[in-house]
Length: 512
Image (tube, rainbow, N blue to C red):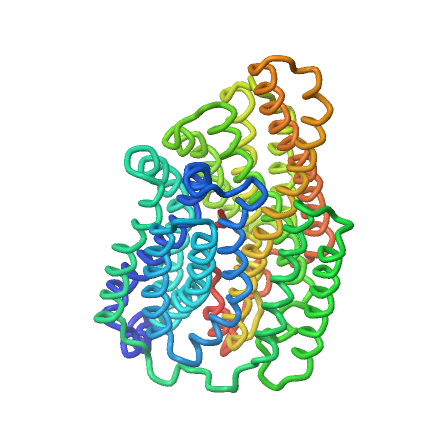
């Protein structure tokens, strides 16, 4: 087939404004990624200002991650039903309004509510953005390039967020880490409104699976609330146990409903396939380990080591650089040469090795000799594992399921993040409390008492990091045993299946 002939269909279908549209879609993605990392850096200042207790502080992260993760599948389905452009613009407008509310927060309830609202509109925005890219870029080579740019912003945006978050917190006020989203959202929404022309006939008008939406969301909320309550009230508390039981019942009911309804929110064929199931499970576990670590390291650097927010932002850079290097230089280069499990398994183990180094953390630990190598190993390991995992998560799915498969990757990351923050915070808080109880009696002066407090905090962090090491090793074992796909180029697709494969181009979404 001649080059002209092969390009003819693309020339007819391709939107002339597609590259301009990519600018605004990428800007929206940058805003979402920035928000995730910026808030981590601003959290200690916001906690102090609003009087948020240590037990409740993780809700600033958890409220967002849970709303985002719990509603992603629903958001994707709404975008298919309403139209992706409309869902995208509404998502941006809502995200800007929620950011304004967060910046103006006067107490913890207002802050948690604003973060949950950001998650709700983020869940509408993210799937709509991915769907727009898929329908606007009809040529396979162009689409791969567009998704590559989008993915690079997801990774690089994390680094920008850490540094920008530090500067805004230190030189202006933590509130600006919320207000900064507003100009991004306004420009992206206005640009999208005038530039994006969604192709006709792209909507999926099958009825909404309302029971699926309700059961999945309530089940996930109960699960995370159970973990969070365990920290303050203990694992044997009746309401804690009740939440776990309720979560199990709701999520089981969700699975049963999805198996019966004609247009399920989550078609079970997407998650029951061995490779994809292995990817979602191992990825979710890895994120549980990573999210908790982000929280602990932020507090360790700022509270224990006395780093400024800007210095903390720069201190995290090696992890982000390692992640981008592992993803683009190791994962992407070896993906077509070795089976995915041989990148995912070793990748998670390298990250676990970095985590293992951090269990040696003490008050006086050196950044250069302990934290720097640990962060580099974590980043390289995670980056190498993420790239093949993302690719495999949509490999071989039917075109009609590609959006759901992508949403499941995001869901496993966001819910893993919510559980990780709650679970590891619980472990750290109980270890800190028992350490301080055991050692405070021998501290007679104020400086000694302060030292015991700091030692207790670090003892709590290292205890939780041991858990994270175990979780990462488990993720590696799952990847090596469950994922059995060969090299991506072994199963070439032809004819109509080739179009399906193009529709399922994976997009890396870096969790923070």
